[in-house]
Length: 115
Image 1 (spheres, one colour):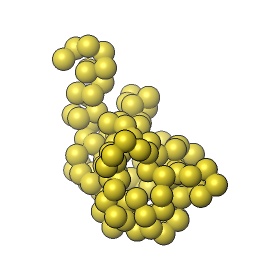
Image 2 (tube, rainbow, N blue to C red):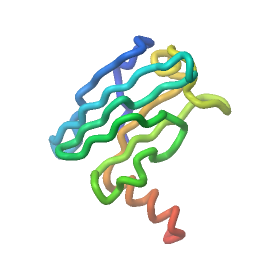
Image 3 (tube, rainbow, N blue to C red):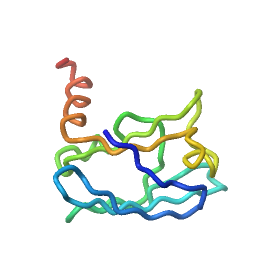
Image 4 (cartoon, rainbow, N blue to C red):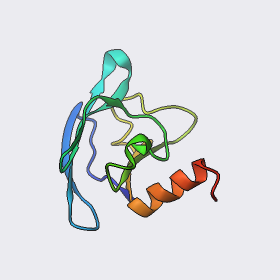
């Protein structure tokens, strides 16, 4: 698991993230004040493209795509609230992580009661 660095309070952000195997993820997120939240506007990995996912606290928001991509996306926030402020990621009140294939598999096994 590695934290996505250099996140600011800028309402539109784009990053290229390198996985341990050297492959690249293109991630674009935005803050929507009228919906009081952060959204993944697009995430691209090879042929896989996902548009329009609300960022919420989860050990793997991409769990449903586990058979298509070898990683996951996790978010954890301080306190009992979702990332709902434009400065949540820049202030580290919320943190966004890329989880490895092994961690995504372990989470899937946990959900299936295999752990």
